[in-house]
Amino acid sequence: MLFKDIIGQEKIKDQLINNFNNNRISHAQLFVESEGGGALGMALAYARYINCSGRLPKDSCGTCPSCLKFNKLAHPDLHIFFPTASNKDNKDVSSKTYISQFREIVLESHYLTLAKWYDHIGIERKHAIINATDCNEIIRLTGIRTYESDYRIFIVWMSEKLQYNAAPKLLKVIEEPPDNTFFIFIAHDPELLPETIMSRLQHLNFPLLGNNEIKKALIEKYDCNEEVARDISFQASGNFIEALNQINLEKPEGTFFLLRDWLRACYSNKPKHIFSNVDAIASFGREKQKAFLNYGLKILDQCLLINYEATKPLKVFEEELEFLLKFSNVVNNVNIVPVTKCFNEAISHISRNANSKIVFADLSFKLHKLFKKAQND
Image (tube, rainbow, N blue to C red; front, side, top):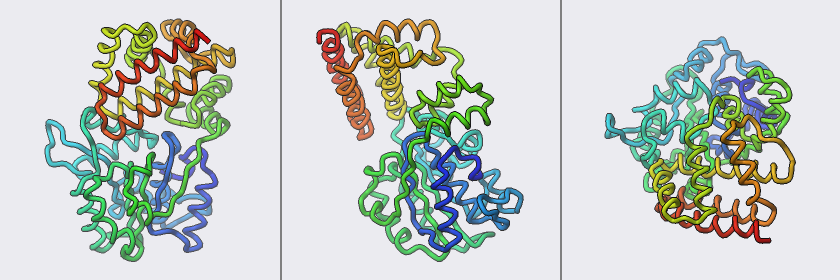
């Protein structure tokens, strides 16, 4: 990844480049982003820039021996760690077990979600962590010399997944790393990191992408026409992953039909139908459950927009349009705030390993009351 491959975030790019060139680089940073902000790509572009032997004013050269290795994410002084869990083929696992798969999926697109990563390695229903083996490997690697470059970079993607009991192992190397050793932690929910880790990191917050930034990227990189790019950028809400999902949409997915049936069951308050859908949702892994809830929020937002004739549905199919037009009658200014709050609370509970069946059942009955309130008021 080069800096030019990252959508928007120009201020952050300039800050990172200036800090390095002026010898003000922090040895331990935390990149905080909402989904689709580009933090993983930025970390990789920054690591490439640090080790590039032909740096340009605003980017890496792309042609030196170091850059050529970064093209494959195979530089020996770049170390990447990420959440893993055992599957039927691998019992004792760590980031090293799956590094080739991680390189593969990131080279395909550095706009990566946890749900997509888990699906890629077949651990959708597992509780994935960055485990003690990974922490021990980080410590081991800091104790040996760099292979080729002056700098050694550790990237810890989704660092909130650090095993809580293992995280303290890293305190000393984070606080007092060897010379020319840099850590870049990436997190969506930094409050889940142990405070002892958080306090030792310099925080860099990634803002949501602007509509114009997304629109420009869709036109220039994905051959979107201007009208479609404008509509997608508006509904992506600063999330480039969501924008890519809209571009790649070819047919209604099973997720939509499950969401539709569940919301209808919530509205009608039929326990048999509610619990049938809850069982189906609970069969997902936790990251997919959270993605399902976030998708639900986007569908409800579209219902609200249709209700107030603020915009037309984007790239929807007959089944989706039919549902959106009908369900917009029960989503309005009376209930959208409490509905959104209920969804976000459910996401938070799922993140903290609450029983998913209880969470979704509770949410279902709360939604019934809120949907009815919108019609009665």
